[in-house]
Length: 227
Ligand SMILES: [Fe+2]
Picture 1 (cartoon, protein in one colour):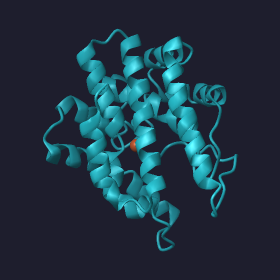
Picture 2 (cartoon, helix red, strand yellow; picture 1 turned 90 degrees about the vertical axis):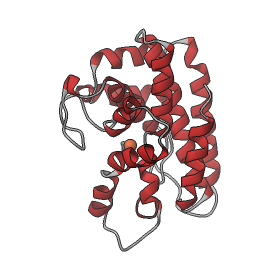
Picture 3 (cartoon, rainbow, N blue to C red; picture 1 turned 135 degrees about the vertical axis):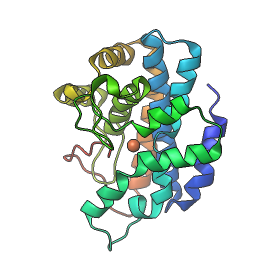
Picture 4 (tube, rainbow, N blue to C red; picture 1 turned 180 degrees about the vertical axis):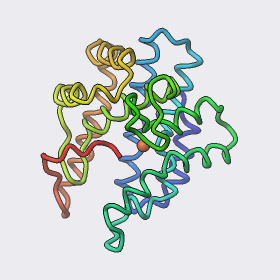
């Protein structure tokens, strides 16, 4: 799928990130969410146009974070964790602004991105939407985003294996639309998933390489669910 315009938008806005590693990480996460979301949509029987829309939304779902790059990704001591989390929660709304300004994205894509942190049981944000109040594409993104975050290295923990990530998601299955979650499981255990596994492995190897350079190594423990 051609996502060149989306990659260019990320590169343009990513200049505000503290380092090249953060930009690589940001892009890799978007690419993985995008690829899985397109496969899940296909498994759910959606047409090519919808699969394209969800792939675009997957690539750009966190674009609003780049408006707050200094606060979210910067190593600032003057911001408390609680304050940082408040800023992080603004990123879906900031994403809407970015995409409207770009003028190249459908209201459907924008609604998927605006709601990608809503949980099926109403415990998500920003509007605590519940069940089918949450746009369908946002319910797909939610599942793919959490999985992609769990199988990636974070500053504070190593990546979980695919099987462990799925077990952890089953523990929190109330957060997801069950129809979407079952389609996601069928995708993960299909042959089509091989390409995504390669992307995940590449992203993990890249992050491990960067963390082996002087600095704080990642460690296991904290679940570190994607904020
Ligand atoms: Fe997000």
